[in-house]
Image (cartoon, rainbow, N blue to C red; front, side, top):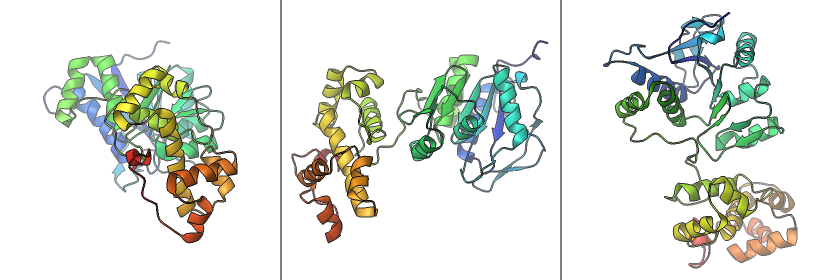
Length: 339
């Protein structure tokens, strides 16, 4: 049987208990503004529904509740089904009926979207096997711990892997929605939505998540992305050539960008980032020096202690014993660029 007729873009939303309101609202409002003619909130060119098995109100993490608009029925009426996650404290955030609906959608080759921790829901349902999964940097370690066989990505806003799309959440949901609008409805409708939302320019999937906690803001997005990759692969440091490749650059090209942006080479920046995290852990945690060295990629304790003292003027053991704060970095050190 052929799937029922549908508009060029129609999204079915499954909202988790305690879902992230901002991610959902930005996603659906981009659809609303793109698919309308004038300002009447009409579903002229695209459509969407909030799906539910029981019709009950769905509570967001803010306490605001959303009413479902359709039942869980034939997933083929949608061009995409999007799962919007939220707080991870609920072991069953969407219920058995919604999981069965998602599996049915996958069987029918309906593209699935995981937004925010919706990626966890898709992975728990067995729907992300052999897929790369984009997650927020905030939940990276939780995802790695729960799904060791998956490849999580936390250095970009969202990622398209065939008929699976995963998004880190937040404002990135608007960028993802804008991409879908452009693909299905055209550039003009995408730009209309962005103009009304007062978003100057939609970011691309490869744009980095705006978070480099141990580094000062850097204007070049390729350098920011390289720093994110470095930060998220500290325990087992990557070759600079691989980091450059992930950023779409040659090793020499990445070195030039780092020298221009930070006045240091990528290798030196990588070591400094690892030492910054190690310093923070020494001061704020009770982990042993062996544990801290392992987490930050220093497998030999003597090398860790030596590099730490060279960077901060004090050994990690002495720093913890003395309870000292962070020493000032010298003017010609890498720390001057990362303070």
